[in-house]
Image (tube, rainbow, N blue to C red; front, side):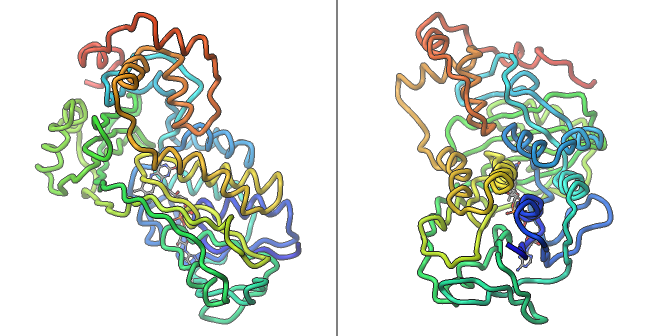
Length: 404
Ligand SMILES: Cc1cc2nc3c(=O)[nH]c(=O)nc-3n(C[C@H](O)[C@H](O)[C@H](O)COP(=O)(O)OP(=O)(O)OC[C@H]3O[C@@H](n4cnc5c(N)ncnc54)[C@H](O)[C@@H]3O)c2cc1C
């Protein structure tokens, strides 16, 4: 393949571009926005104001694709937290005990993550140029339309994210409909930054049933905390704090009440789960879609960036394949749209998870998009054996040191 053009220079786009350098003579990224000179949110990425944590699957894939990138992120001030070893978690069933698993997360601002990743990628990004369509026909895509003309390509990759217009562009070439599935999450987000020390655990207060009211607090670079309320949080100062206090436990309100806010409270209502089944469509040759254009899940699951990294690693190893993209999307999609499991038997499992390293590892491995180590004996024992009592709120909170 001689020339690949990637549309969109967000995370999925630049990672796919890095992967394609192993398969194409020339790789170019078209980005409609301009990157900021220093890590700051930008217009083309409205979600960059909000919390973006990277899960273990994404951490590992990113480091394999771009060796050294994770160390650079941590050097730049990102925080690594084990789940639940370094996390204070109030789940639907109660407070988690603290123990180590193989699942980690990395917390930093999205702009910092993007900047560090881009510093590892040696691909031309043409900024300020929007793709407005494709050229070719239903059999083969031959290039991209921009307001200034046509750019020819042997492969065009759509990585224009949540607002991708690619279904219209394909339809204009006569490509049969691509099936799109939408599952509303029913939640909104509100996010605010606070000044606060980095040496605190990640804090998560989950709702009893999803979708509903919850909150998280993650330490990020620059001695700041990024605090998110989910459900239907208000956007005014007093309402935001009251909402945090009204969660199933007020620990986040207790922390932010004493902290200095940085900037406004920002909403996000765009939380629908959406999947486009490109892999089952009769697509033209010379076309691939990746990232949020293919699958986007309720941000509560913190999966999109990890799926982008895992996908890019597959492309690097195997070359471009819509089937491989779909396989990487599947796990995240299934987890996000699964019905909440209810019933007596499952309630017992739920409670056991709080105190069993075996069961907790399974849960956190799923969330972290890494294969679980399946020790069935240990898992069975944990389910039927004596269950340790879930922790009280005082016991859970006192497992960690807190800023005064
Ligand atoms: C509120 C919120 C919180 C989230 N939190 C997390 C989290 O904690 N962890 C996680 O892993 N994921 C999270 N995500 C998901 C994550 O943002 C995406 O999965 C991730 O950005 C990868 O998407 P992408 O590269 O496909 O699209 P984007 O990152 O949105 O990038 C698309 C790019 O394409 C450009 N573009 C758009 N149209 C055109 C065009 N016509 N021509 C050229 N360029 C174009 C845009 O400017 C942008 O740069 C969150 C999402 C939201 C909305």
